[in-house]
Amino acid sequence: MTNTQSDITAARIIYEEIVPALAPWMHDVKAGQSLRIVDLEGNQAVDFLMYNSADDAERYSAQDTMAMQGNIFLHAGTRLLSNEGRAMMSISATNVAYHDTIGGACSCESNTLRYGHFTKNQHSCVDNFLDANARAGRSKRDMVSNINFFMNVPVESDGALGIVDGISGPGLWVELKAEMDVTIVVSNCPQINNPCNGFNPTPVQMIVYE
Ligand SMILES: [Zn+2]
Image 1 (cartoon, rainbow, N blue to C red):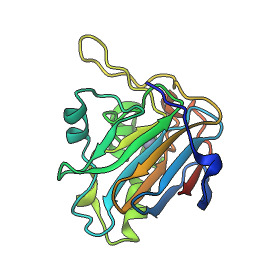
Image 2: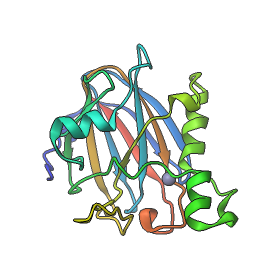
Image 3: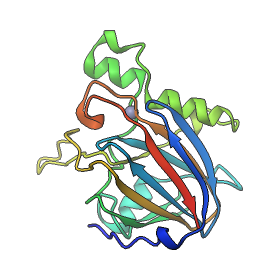
């Protein structure tokens, strides 16, 4: 489900940054503000966590989000819930059909299991999450199931998961409206062993506006 009705042209831009390929990013978004994530070159997975800025014990919950909406895909209109069952952000608009929240974040462990020991020293999303979160005093125990914007993880009728060619494209975007003050932690996914980044990780753009 897409909704491409964006109000960014009339908005006041508060913050703008290009996140380089492979890099982590952390930023606060206040209640009422919006964040647009732009997949500049297409097929770039953006691994995404968020925490309540006032108390980071409250954080994104994939389980609560999927259970509440009765659907495993994230699309325009999805409310992203916390482990307290409260809306943290909602997907106000996107021109990509759906986004994933079941594929997880790539890690040293998952890479070596799936792709072989030679991948052990490759950079991963878990490295990025730990790097960004460490600046705010968070550690491995604060890692939870994440969102993968622009990543295509279809579920077959027998329940099998795929990580396949993306349904995003150059310049496509997702817009998130904050329902509370949130701290966003992103890994611009460095994965090069499956098609989630088209085997070529690329930069993405972050725009915070109100
Ligand atoms: Zn990754």
